Structures are given as C-alpha cells and as structure tokens.
Length: 169
Image 1 (tube, rainbow, N blue to C red):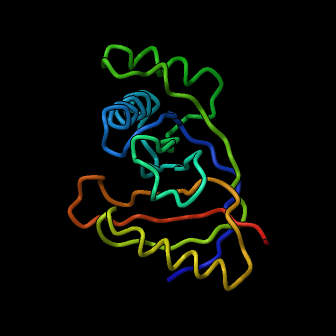
Image 2: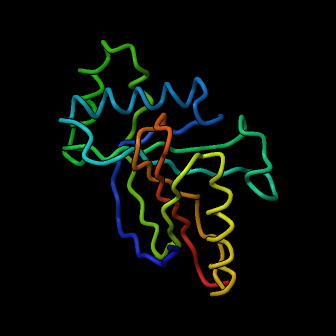
C-alpha cells in the first residue's frame, strides 16, 4: 500500500560512491559501514541507501555502473563527539575502507512510501505505483530515492521500503 509519510531528522553512518549494487565498490562500502558500526556498539537499524543519477531521463535507464549512492547505517553512539574517529581507528585492522565512513544528517520531509516485496529487479513495478500515486496528488520528486533493506541483500525473497521525498508540483 502506497502512503504519504513525514520523515524528520535522521543521523546515520554513511559511505558515498558510484557503481552498481553488489559491485566491488558497493560491497566494500557495506563492509566499512559494518566494521565501524561494530566498534560503536553495533547497527541499530537496517542498511539503507539513497540512490540517484546525474543524467537526464528515467534513472532505471541509466547504466548501473553510473548510479550514485550514499549507503547509510544507523549505529549506536554515532552522534557522540569523537566517536566516529575512535571507531574508525579501532576498525582499521579489519582491512575495510573505514576512512570512507562519515556521519550524515538529513531530513527528507514529506515522502511517498511503499514496501516492495520481491527481487530488486522487479522494483520498477512498485516504483510505477509510487509514480502514479504522486501524479494523482500533484507531487514531484524532491530528493534522492531512499531504500531501507528490511532483509539481507542476498535474501531470496527481499523486502524493501521504497521511499521518495516529494513536494507539490
């Protein structure tokens, strides 16, 4: 079921990159996030991703190796002064690219949201339903596409919250 939600201020560990989901850079970024989060006391929520492209036209028509993303992970103690630096230093021995991990704070405001059940390759169906919902209400995109991975990325039956910040047209 598609719905409108209001998303307030959020603070997350973050790694930014370019490339296809599941590609080398993407997988490396996930490893770095979890290595640093572990040193902070663990992840406190699921992995998330903000996705966008810089080319004109439909994002799903852009080659996946040109997709841009911020991977996000809620973590214990992320907002404590100096905690990130201490956690990166402690995680350095893991071999993960811990220096890429930053703290990001953002507010999305009003969003259209739906839970997609099924393969990532079929998200376009849920995205089409979201686009129709937005069009019916005179809403347009107002920020990167946001995904919250409710299951492991390799789960054969994934569940993903698809969220799109919006504003009136």
